[in-house]
Length: 289
Image (cartoon, rainbow, N blue to C red; front, side):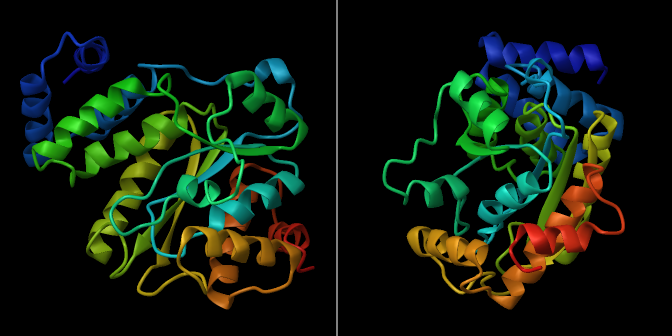
């Protein structure tokens, strides 16, 4: 398919001029016949452009816009530490997160365990927090990649969820709408991971890195172990408590520490905030240096 044809179809999904049956037909075609890399890039950018794409130029921020995305696991609370740590190193992290899928925990679910936490601030408040604090974690609004929501709903009822081109497009449509300079992917591997085998996890990581870089965003990926719970706790409120303990230095689970530091280093390097001293910068930001 050409870029023009893909954009026509995705805009039709957004505008409800494309029927559910037509969406299902395309999803099944992609599921069985795959897509070329240019087609994957076009699909992702069309879904991104179906809604609002955040622009940070007016804020005159003095650092890169950086984010991390995990494919999900149990006890995966790294976002709650990485945001503040990267912000302390000079980056800006406008993290748009989701809820849990299946057995995996969602960052929004964890944050809602904090009494009074607003996961859907208005746009002005979101931008104000990013400018003043450097990090904000919010939920996806209806204006961000709206075509993806309808596309995914059809995939869910046609057994076409497990398609690497479609998974890649769904993840990156929302992430690229954040207006990022750099993105780091944490692709889980093992019995508790979203993808059932190492080979599929590796293929997903390669697809996401290829498409995101093709869309103009510096992107790298780490494959991390999810054969056991990442943190020492599993559950929304207790994981938030463990994140606070990590940041204050009260307690750090060794496995969680290693993964968090590796992702932090990758975010600083991808955001061009550090080179050889990236690890020490993460140690200092995490209160461990």
